[in-house]
Length: 218
Ligand code: DX5
Ligand code: ZN
Image (cartoon, rainbow, N blue to C red):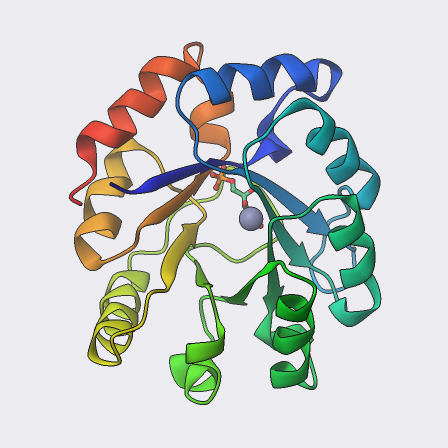
């Protein structure tokens, strides 16, 4: 069974606790938190303080997506505030192997995020050290963008790499995921599905999450 990770970037921040409780009741598996620094991506969002607040209101794993330059500077802060999984972008890190080890040494799951135009080559020497790979299916920075269909063969290729090496690594997809796109991304081999606008802009979180599960091909 695939996992659903609602991105709270699309939630109503004036009623965040309510929104999180609702998606949790609807069967969400993770809570996805999008951290943007206005430098690596052209948008600014939230930071460790919000992770700390979310940690107090849910027991679900917190899936932190760092869209920030030089993420090494902030890993300790996100770990301390309660992150369960930390995704760093390969495009934003200099000593990738070291950063991945650092996250793992802190007892947190390490995930590597790749922008749409980034090839899978960067995974060659670090794949066995990862718990998850996050394939961006839009260019990071904003919610509500259109899924990029060229990412389908990339997901398949990564699934093959992981299977051939007999590794137990999740493939997370992020951007433009909704009931209509989840069928093809799950058939291609993804198993964790981030969805922001599709869930939080619907008027019934339960039925949209249910629909996403129905359309999953895993
Ligand atoms: C994009 C973020 C995503 C995004 C998802 O930069 O990483 O998590 O907010 O939003 P939707 O599901 O609306 O594409
Ligand atoms: Zn994200």
